Length: 93
Image 1 (tube, rainbow, N blue to C red):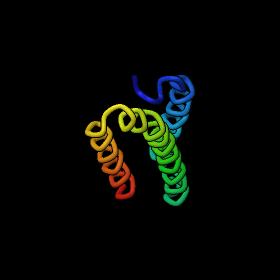
Image 2 (image 1 turned 30 degrees about the horizontal axis):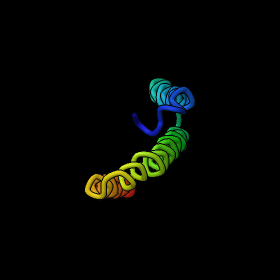
Image 3 (image 1 turned 60 degrees about the horizontal axis):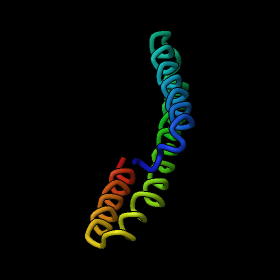
Image 4 (image 1 turned 180 degrees about the horizontal axis):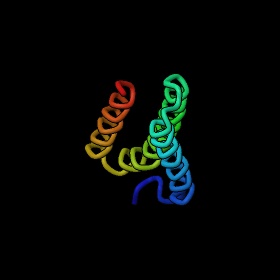
């Protein structure tokens, strides 16, 4: 079971808010809003996604990774590497 399952509804609410931000960006472009104002909103949406990703990563590490490490050293090592790869992708984005 994924680590975020117990907070699924909260995560979905957050994602719907982010989706609304992106729709707002589409409207801004359609309405020819000033570039800097659009970029400000892009930054806000990006931060919201990054914050969501970090929360999900934290839940993954405190749940899935810890459980795998406790129950199976090989599986734990694989989960740690998987989390490390995810962190690297987040840092690069």
